[in-house]
Image 1: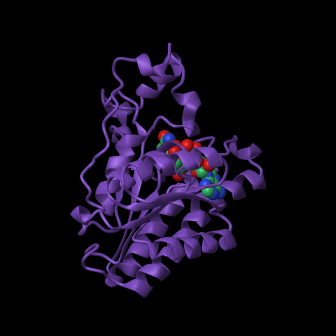
Image 2: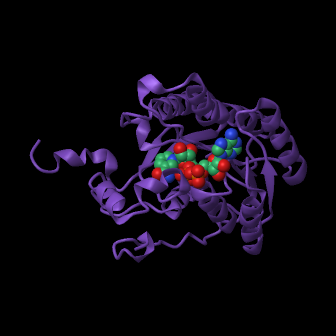
Length: 282
Ligand code: NAD
């Protein structure tokens, strides 16, 4: 039985209100999963979008084509977010093509799981380099451009917005995934420290901390009935999250509707961080 047939799973529609009209966005790792949904939702909301990917040019081009159908401009750009030169080139090209950047969604991420005492230095470095250093490299380029351009009132109240894709594992320890949890814990304080530093320049920096979202990164956790039921023991709301649940939050955070929201992690997790084990007794 496929998960799509489960009666308790709903697929919410993405917003169509064009609250990001005229803005330019870069979404890293947006050929699949959450990044794909975020890129499409931001495009539907009126922004032109750079669809960054590392592998899978066809998928990335499809995402760009879907955004173009909604009336926004989009193109796919290959770059490894953990490579400084490639990140700089990606921003240079975006500024050439679109003139500037208003919204960065630092979404690219991966897992390389192992019991702690078997974790290799390569597994540790790869996860930290992509999930944490990659977000640093992209955020730094974005802030440089936001400061150079300053606020353009006709476009947005702020000079720029950064959304870091974190995880509930910036809060919840995760045995067997020490490198991943460390990277997301790092994202939390990196995000808050950047937010504190650049707020006077009217730059907003926030995170989204998703719970369990149905994407390729965690397929084993939802693809069988048994795995899905086990996962639901951790989710008080009793459904898995869909990438569109995160996309809605991203559009709102990037928009001027969230203009006074700065330096927060918006948890979107169906209550996973509510300590479901304490629901009865404790
Ligand atoms: P995903 O695997 O579909 O997406 C991750 C994307 O990042 C992929 O397209 C991958 O190619 C890309 N990527 C990996 N390394 C890259 C690199 N060096 N440069 C550029 N792109 C690279 O999985 P997803 O669930 O959509 O993950 C997106 C983000 O959401 C990640 O940061 C992940 O940690 C976070 N997240 C996911 C969940 C979940 O339950 N799915 C929960 C919490 C947080």
